[in-house]
Length: 220
Image (cartoon, rainbow, N blue to C red; front, side, top):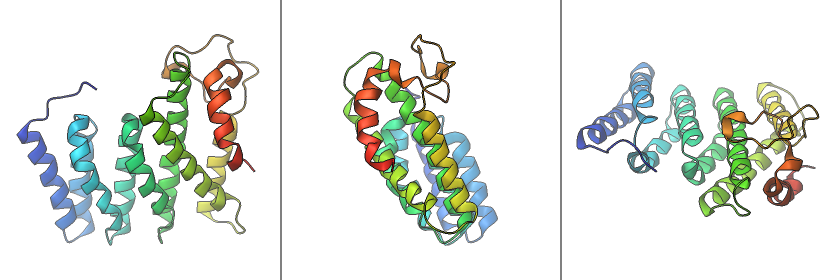
C-alpha cells in the first residue's frame, strides 16, 4: 500500500503524543494529546501505524473511561481505513464490550457497526473480481464474525438500557445488510462507494457462497 513517507520527525511526533497521553495525570490533558494524535494518525503511512497501534491499544486499560472511549473511537477509524489491522483491533473491541462504563461499551458497538459494514462491502467488491478472499481480508472477516457473535449475545439477553438498545441496532444493521433490495439495480457495484446499505446479495457470488454460509450459525 502506498502511503506517506515515514520520516523520523513524524514518527517521533506521534510517539511523543502517545507517550504524553499515557503519562498525563488528568483527563483533559490526556484527551488533548489524543485529539492531536487522532488528527495526524489517520493520514499516516500504514507502516507507521503498525508500529504505533500496539501502544495505542494499550490505552484501553487506562483508568479514565473518557480516555478508553476516545481510544476506541480512534482505533475504529483506523480499522475503517486499513482493514489489514482488524485482526489486531477487533479483539480489543471485543474486550471493550466488557468495559464497566456503558459509554465505552456503546462506543465499541458503534465502531463495530461501521467496521462490519465496511468489511462486508470490501468482500463484496473483491467478490466481483475473484472467487477467493485474500488472507488478510478473510482473517479480518473472521474477527468481525466473532465481534458480531458477542454483540448478539448482548442484544438478546434479558433487560434493557442503552447498551442493549445499541446492540439491537447492530442486529438490525446486519439484517439489512443481508436483505436483498427489491428496488436495487441489477448491475453490480463498481466500487465501495456505490454500494447501498442493503446489498443485492444474489448478484454477488462470493457473498452468497462464502459470507452467508460462514455467518449462518450466528443468525439464530
